[in-house]
Image (cartoon, rainbow, N blue to C red; front, side, top):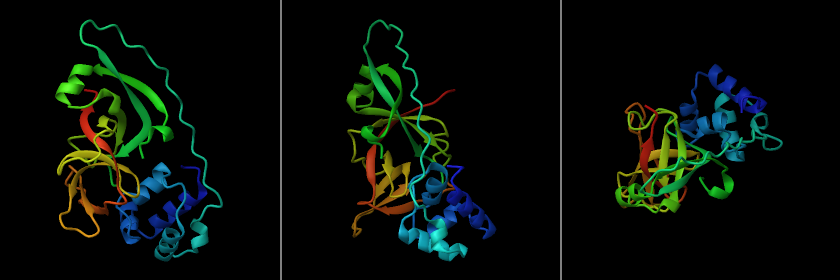
Length: 230
């Protein structure tokens, strides 16, 4: 989104006011990753009326300067060539699609109909069923971005996500939409909260936990494993 003049202007004005993206997000009542997702990932495509008004008040400009006449076009994703797996004797392999969405593991909805398949991973079906306790047909591979889940998850790692498991137990790791962007966090349900709320926890102590309303969160799935290049 580096060629979007409104995003460029907003970055410059935040810098002039001595504000980083996390501080700006919190100042308008959003999750810490909101401005990062908007400025760097293009999600949401445009600011809503309320957010543009609040940001304009913080950085000292007219709210109209932060509003798009129409949503900016995103660069189309290139489809990668599928490579057939080598023949492996013995146990059958399950084909797991990698989707063209990223889960932010930084200062900070995977639905197949909105995301293109970019590659396929072939993993032993028995390992998935017996070690992961999952149906291979419910698995998706997503790429992680950022450092808030270090050392458990690093920038660029692939996450094997069970999209059939959308109610992770307390303390389990999940990919979810937190109201501002797609993130990977440990999830805790706050007891007796009204409305129901979730505490989202990073592994990296440099990132503080934050809370979002359960109705705003869309649980994409439970993270089973991390696929990492050594």
